Length: 167
Image (cartoon, rainbow, N blue to C red; front, top):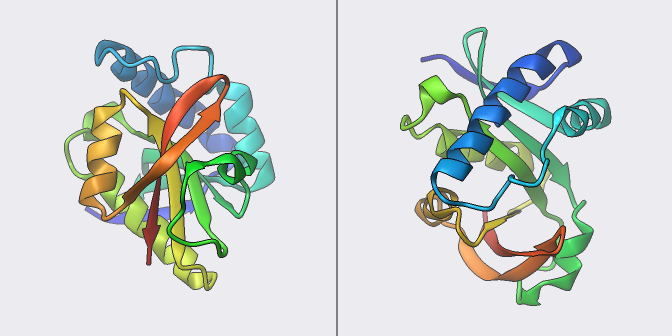
């Protein structure tokens, strides 16, 4: 496998949306409420790409994963009910999804490793992320990747579990 992590382009949007649609269905099948409210959607993906924050994990030419990656840009994290490990610059990632045919290959962790490399390349040593309280797969990935549960944040009226990893 020849994995790369790069900025998404407009031509990637249909493949990204397919990946996210399948992830939305997986969340529902798992009994999770996450992503069952019309978010994410194609407009969000387009906005991510236009802002330069949409990234894809590729296996050769095939897009196998997606994430939005931002630096110091999550206002809700200022309202954490809990305590972050650090209060310095951070990289935050959202909308992590892996292509249906690549599930179970540890690619979420690989993508997080690429995001950590992105952070280090920007002299940032903190990764922050959140997930729904019933997204057990993502919570497991966070724990296996060395993230620490720091408290709760709220998005679209729903509490989310917030995590941080110091690099």
